[in-house]
Amino acid sequence: NSLVERTANPKQLTDFFMGIRLIGATQLEEEFLLALKKYERLYGLSLLPSIIE
Image 1 (cartoon, rainbow, N blue to C red):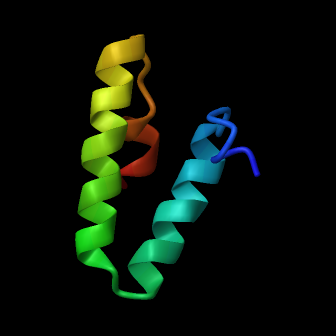
Image 2 (cartoon, rainbow, N blue to C red):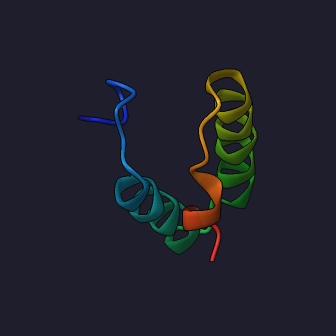
C-alpha cells in the first residue's frame, strides 16, 4: 500500500479522503489533513490543493 510506504500520489490521497467522507468519519478526516499539512511543511510538498475540492 503506497500510503503506508509514504509514496502516495495526489489521486490516491483524493480517493482515500473521499472514502473517509463517504463513511462520515469527519474527525478522522480532520486528523489526517492536519498530519498531511505538517508533512507538507516538513518536506516542502504541495498535495492539499488537489485533495480539497
